[in-house]
Length: 265
Ligand code: SAM
Image 1 (cartoon, helix red, strand yellow):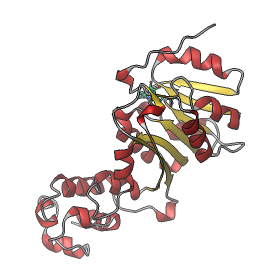
Image 2 (image 1 turned 90 degrees about the horizontal axis):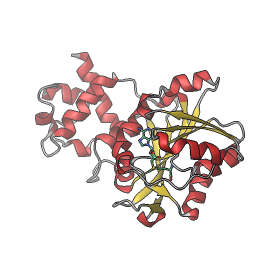
Image 3 (image 1 turned 180 degrees about the vertical axis):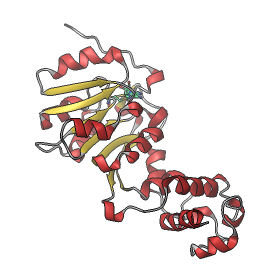
């Protein structure tokens, strides 16, 4: 059957990559190896799917838009073994997917729909134990926040929560013209590698969330003020943190110690 190119849907965050140079750069960055279990989030019309499939021989893709699936399946049939899961990626249990296929860890890739890129990132981080690495196209501004260091203007919740779970490696930028239709923002590709178990923090995740959220919720205030509902000044000092400091100057490790103080109350 002949499938005409789909009309990109705004509601699904569809911006299809068409510039060959960037497609090649992404595939090179992923460097698929024989035996990898590759999972692509949002394959769309297959700009990344087909070259990844050609390199790896098989791939599992998760796509929400039913209309795109028949054409993609047809195009892939001559290239390799493509399994398409028709679902919202946020509802896919990635650990169970790895388990079902008898693999220890997945390699995840995707030119993500920007309207839900942070929830997708955190969904993957929640399944980090089942993931070897991730390569994502995101808004450049999001990649900057993910990789930001303490003291930077864009250092915030996303930086702390991601860096406590993963190594974040920004790779290269991609201009709007590389997509159809062009998004209104610059994009960038980032590699995210879950930390090995011995490098992960051991604070209670909910307490950590609460501390980080409160601290950055009022980033202009001193920590003593921003965390007033959670920890008093003495408890903040016991975490080896100055209650007069501001959230943006704290390292991810400082937040772990604050969360532990909260747990020790
Ligand atoms: N990978 C293609 C490319 O590079 O040309 C398409 C990228 S486009 C930015 C994002 C893709 O994610 C679209 O195909 C869209 O339908 C799909 N998508 C949107 N929301 C999704 C969700 N919740 N779960 C899975 N896929 C989703």
